[in-house]
Length: 281
Image (spheres, helix red, strand yellow):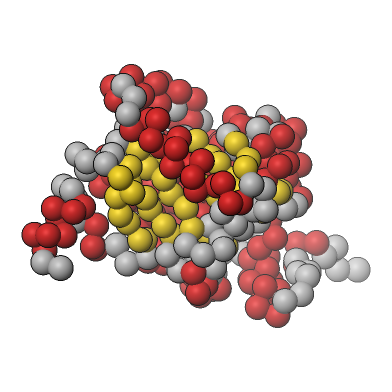
């Protein structure tokens, strides 16, 4: 396909620079974004993390896009950070500084994008992938999908999105329970407590998300954008909380608990965090 034909098919933005995201127009006005590392359950490497932090600027600029559906290729939405990315962050001020900015941008750029964004949560979602799923304006989950914030399993504070999004969605009591325990949540429970907009059978997930996008893409664009902008002031007002949670998460990546959490993941065992050990006798 020639460059000219590619741009004609895909509108005003050159999407070809994205390597970890599969991007296409489902139909006029609807952009379908798939997190595209199915061989790794769409786990987050450095490149995917970076791409998910910037793509929303292109979505905002694309004249052809009026609504977005984001989902995962294959059976997972995104299985969290891959081991290489986690290992690279341990004890590295340079890496955690970069991750801080990108994690902040993922949430802020989804929040500030004027186009409505719908997540179709088709499978496991953890970490930065879950941030995309739950920060989206409308979140639709398969009954079979399961997710957890998961940060405490690694030995780091719940940063990313959870400290601001979860209390707004499901209330402080449920947010504290699930963030402090890292318990898994399935689609039905996520809908019951208000963490997601809607739960549907797996075979109806993508159709439901696309039908929702179709309604929004054919609706009053200024009114939709302005309603999203207004509602998201709740999220913007919590920006200091968000920055604090991210900073504390990154600080924990420099400590010994995160190293033990990583080692336990590699060795497929329960972690024994140094911070749980009592003072020497």
